[in-house]
Image (cartoon, rainbow, N blue to C red; front, side, top):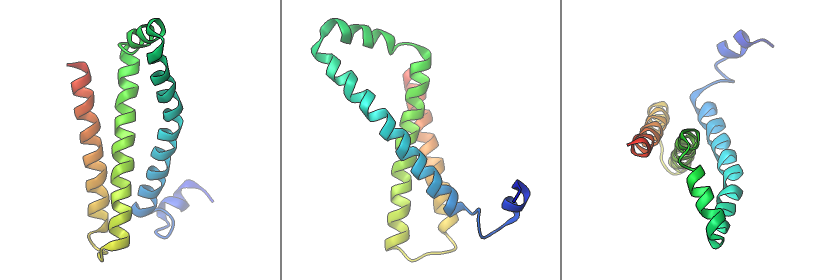
Length: 119
């Protein structure tokens, strides 16, 4: 099965599937981040190592990765809200609108965070 077959198959690729995959990937990225976050919190007890870590976080690449982290958190949160809405609310035509809205809000939150990091 090639890409054009998948793209044209309405039963396989739809907005609900895309939202579910993005929700799972963002959860995976957050799960990978958390051990590093706890490690950095553990460095707070060692003042010299923690000050070196804080100095490292001023690197622009770290700030950009923080954007992706905040965006992943926002997407995961919005995806969770989408799942709750699908389970507890009855709508079908508006479903794709709410999926698009949740992604848009997630990106806006991530971009607002990125603007605050570089200002």
